[in-house]
Image 1 (cartoon, helix red, strand yellow):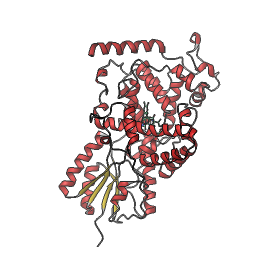
Image 2 (tube, rainbow, N blue to C red):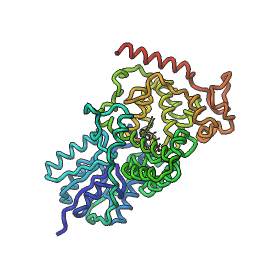
Image 3 (tube, helix red, strand yellow):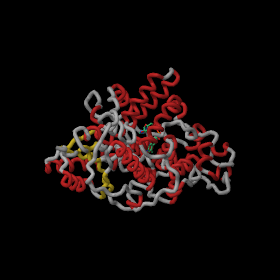
Image 4 (cartoon, rainbow, N blue to C red):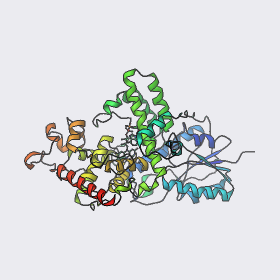
Length: 469
Ligand SMILES: Cc1cc2nc3c(=O)[nH]c(=O)nc-3n(C[C@H](O)[C@H](O)[C@H](O)COP(=O)(O)OP(=O)(O)OC[C@H]3O[C@@H](n4cnc5c(N)ncnc54)[C@H](O)[C@@H]3O)c2cc1C
């Protein structure tokens, strides 16, 4: 007799290698991997065409990879809960496997699914793979979640790491299960992005990992802050879409560290610690889901932010007259990616120079980033605003001009993304223009004076602290 199938509810993990849920679901019989394409239309608050297009490509490549193993991806439209109820009814599935989601919305769905499965008498099996360690695995000596990265990272490094799981040899999906076609961005009322995006899919991600290990991580300590060079791994979207598990990346980096010469070890170790930043923010969101609505640090709740205005529009379009800020925003608009150093500069500029609420920036980044990850994005924005867990103190305000001198002194990154400035002497990109003269005909003057706005920020934060504490 053919055993009853197991459903694998596919949410954000589009890989066949090192996929614990897939391997477990397929262990004792046929498997039904199913993805539910929700039916919201167009202006979804936190989603945009670039990441959605990347998702579609991931779905297609995941389906192709499953087919090489004998299975296929079932696509259904609409709400996952009602879809799972129907699918269980149609197929007589005996179990539902899923990978736990780090976000509050995903967790709510999981609670509802638990009730559904109980109701239907179907086994529900949870897998946790979004980060290497469950957020609850790490706590301080007083049994509290960590609020500060450095002790968190020490505890994280000290925990034994699980090994990657080999790809299943063979899978089987019953032939008679109906599926919609693989979605395109039109499904959500979006237009296909016109710019060339990074290649999606597990194979492309594995290539990026190999490249990073062979050419990037050994020099990571020196190069990671220079936005004009490929000095970082470019694996963030691969983690976001589970094209690679954090487990796989860690194991490969740890192996490289073990076999590296002394000079390369520092860079590789630093790279491994960046993976811990991601896990730190996942843990913060797990323990304090309210960070999506409020400042993590209660002292900074109720700060008087400016209403979005014309300058916010300039920031969004990369037209502020601050070359490094504009270069970052244009890189984001064009590619769906922005270098980490420049994410910090643009985020501080929005919050500390324009005095706009970090939530506006958080939302704009989520709409445009292919690697848009709720926990890391919220963490990055609250860090930059000075309101988050282990954030930059409010008085440490990055000066966009000094940052340019330090990290892009020859203007290579700026010239790449702001073509109006490509023939300008790099020295002119390092300080505000003299005598209010534009540095290029079609490039605007700075929309504000950094020193003045810095003083204003210090005064606003100081006054708020005095009033509330
Ligand atoms: C305002 C702001 C918003 C951000 N939004 C996101 C986001 O939506 N999604 C996202 O993945 N990262 C976000 N980051 C973190 C960081 O900028 C990106 O992870 C990094 O630029 C991705 O490039 P990479 O893969 O080459 O990173 P690498 O430098 O090669 O780092 C390796 C991996 O470590 C993790 N990592 C590195 N730095 C951080 C960090 N500061 N916080 C959390 N994880 C980190 C990422 O998963 C990254 O892929 C944000 C940072 C800031 C300041």
